[in-house]
Amino acid sequence: MRQAALALTLILLGSTPSVGQGDTLATAWQHLASQLPPDPTRAARMINNSYAGRGVPLTFWVRSTVPDSALRGLTVADHPCGTTAFTLAPRLPPKDQRLEGERMAEVDAHGRELRVWPVPVDHWPRAINGDELLLNFPAGDRQDLALAVKPDGRYRIVPLIDAPSSEHVDCPPYRGFGTSAYTRCVRWQTRIVVYQGPCT
Image (cartoon, rainbow, N blue to C red; front, side):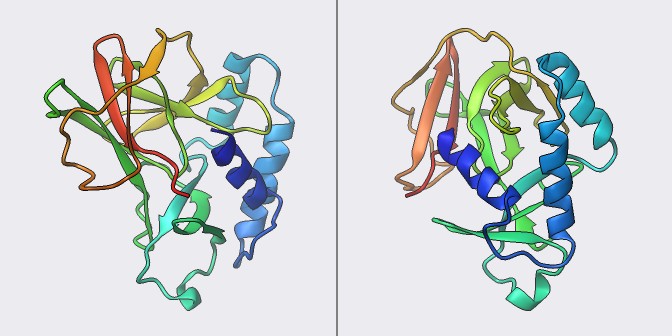
């Protein structure tokens, strides 16, 4: 989680090369994050209202086949696993064909997929509520907001609920991430979510 917050902070502070209007987006988000009210419910509402119809700024992978000359309008940053872009996304995954996100899945004890969520880069599962997966959502230094994602890619910002305690567990035999060394599993009571942990 700290790595995700750090990565987003570095992008917002402009410590990496940017292209076109990406700086304006990052600056506007940084300003809004600094103005959020202390109450998480009001803060979530303010973010959702401010970016209604456009989607909040999120981070995605730049496809390895995209040349640097095609990155106009994006704030790009180096990442241990590739190159990322910070951009508005009304729905997940982004429609911009230059970009791609990641995925997380709920599985049963035998590793069979029950549902899949498209997610941005460097977000981790914090809670599960019905068919919504709640991910960490860095907004400045605060830790009380979450990105609530549905399997169809719709999402919203919500206060981070008091979820049942979670624990990291050995993953069932899941094939969705191949032989990745970064596969992780977290369990809330009887529900298991498998995801790709941070690469190093």
